[in-house]
Amino acid sequence: MTRPPAENDAAEPLSRRPAIRIHDLRKDFGELVAIDRISLEIARGEFFMIVGPSGCGKTTLLRILAGLETITSGAIDIATPSSQRPANSMIFQGDSIFPWMTVWSNAAYGLKMRGASSAIIKEVVGHYLACTGLTRFAAYYPHQLSGGMRQRVAIARAFANDPEILLMDEPFSALDAQNRLLLQEELLRIWEEHKKTVVFITHSVDEAVFLGDRIMVMTAQPGRAKAFVPVPLARPRNIMELQKSAEYGELIANIWASLRDEVQRARRREQEMTS
Amino acid sequence: MSVQTIAAGQRAAMSARARDRLLNVISPLALLLLWELCARFHFIDTRFFPAPSSVFATLIEMLRSGDLLAHTAISLQRLAYGTIVGALPALILGIAMGLNRPIRALFDPLIAATYPVPKSAILPLALLIFGLGEGSKIFMVAIGVFFPMVINTTTGVLGISKIYLDVGRNYKASRWNTFWTIALPGALPVIVTGLKLGIGIGLVLIAVAEMVGARSGLGYLIWSAWSTFAVEEMYVGLFAIAIIGFLITLGLNELERVIIPWKPE
Image (cartoon, rainbow over all chains, first blue to last red):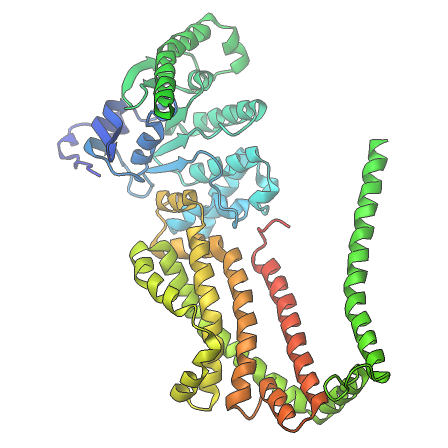
């Protein structure tokens, strides 16, 4: 992956540098162009949302940021102000916590891999298990937990790792509506405390508006940036209050209008491929 | 109303389990009884099928003289050493093959080509190389354990969901930690199955190896009983092997429960 050294950034104070800078990114899988000409900057502490039809390359983009995929061309610059802390932690779509570890060991995984002292592990993991309401379940194995609790373990694991950037790939998509709402609120509450940079993929427009500072709408394959929509809603946000406001409804309508064409295009393409 | 139905259902399940356990005990006892009766009334040739009671008397006698325990101990020792010698390299090679494509490409054809060779057919070669001492016995067990272990370990590692390896990479797990925290525990249920299969084959091979080139062990006991026509002793040897196999299976099931606490019942 090309990550050009940031030599000329010396004049730019670290705090004002964007957390992520992507320039003219392209990713091919053989013949298929997954991501094409994406350029964007994500500010430090920004809650950045990506919505797009399925197969538009959103997950690929996130995996590139996580260092799990190489890029075909373009440049990515991820600011790493502190060498002590990891650049990013990813919360994967679906079950990703280790079935063979207890809740505690799962949450401690990142810190253990970094060789953190046991005192620090105890403090940090204890804190985030409390945040996610899992303290009582520290000694449980994942198969003893519900899907929502397992995803909370994944969130605790990512936060406990204390990364610069949190990458979240549809983390709540497998949950029922009630659990999703509760976890969204919990995520916002933890995020308000620490203000980490978050890149969050979703296919739900509601979720994007409820959580995000800014939303990127992607086109159907090849994935391009179709629109960037700022979300000027005050924080802390309350979903009940939001749903009553006209501003919220208008944002949803706008984004959905932009997204609908792409979803339809993706659907037509699928039909062409299967027929 | 519905609560009562559930309770009744549970009672039915309990009694079904109790009944299964009872049937499990009854079937071998019934067979022994039938055998005893047939022997007593000379429906079967007692030169080949001596009555269980006379086999039992011989068993007591052999236990008292210490012969049986000595032969059992030496066989178990060979089985244990052979299992370690066969399982450890198989475990390491299997995990390496599971994690690393070139290593897999390198060793796959070798294993595919050598696996179908009947292990007992290698015994003369083992005797040639290792002589009549302990080496040839341990080698035979080791080779029996090696194949199911290496095949199951590779399969187990390959079967680990890719997402867990991605998590390891994302959290910057070192090669050693990937092995220790993801590959090994992730493949462990399949590995333990391989170990069970391997020890079963090892038990067969140790008996065969002791028949040909040994002066001790349960295989030797059975073989020398044949050559002196001490049929009761032969049955004692056979029972001893059967019981060892049964106890090892029980022990490994227990071990599995302890080292794989995350496996749902």
